[in-house]
Image 1 (cartoon, rainbow, N blue to C red):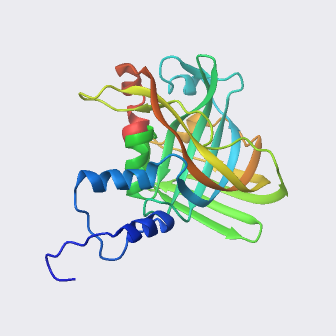
Image 2: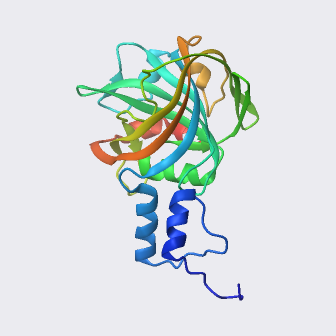
Length: 275
């Protein structure tokens, strides 16, 4: 390409970007509204395939109800069972040019009359995934080192951040399961926004999970923590049950505001969300 020449992405190349999740070699943005809208439609269009063959090693774990109550915004409360879904995921294909790994804990909560999930902690090893998750879906993502190794019917996953090994999971895959609760295909209640002129708000959304493989798994879990990632204060015991999933994920209901968030919530959770 001649120096200073700006690449133009043809309609055919845009289709290839959508199918492969990778920008064509040599492509450069034109910074036009039309191009920005096309990129948003490619990534966030209703029903768009966003993740392909995503893999999750997950465990349902008991949590300290008192600690979790302090992590929830006003109007959201823990469900009757003080449990959460903890997982490590491997994403080998996305429609936004990233291949990355992720770990998170989703608290089982209630908001008004609805059962939902709230994410107080989540880490990724890719900055694009971090930006999108924080700015559009209210996931308080931070950067960490995440390992994922598959050996026959065993999955090993570890999560490290700032020199501390926070999670170590070893999952031995078992029988196929035909009905498992979805991970992302459920209503969320996340907090979007932070200190400043923007108004922090409670949002709800959900994706569409399409299961490819679902198995029971015997999960051995080791949890540690630090001041900024106090997982050992949240998780209060060994896994109740474990699972392994492979899924395709499509864009579902986009974020909608369902309430406001008080400054006291942002102050209480600042070490966890912003450090």
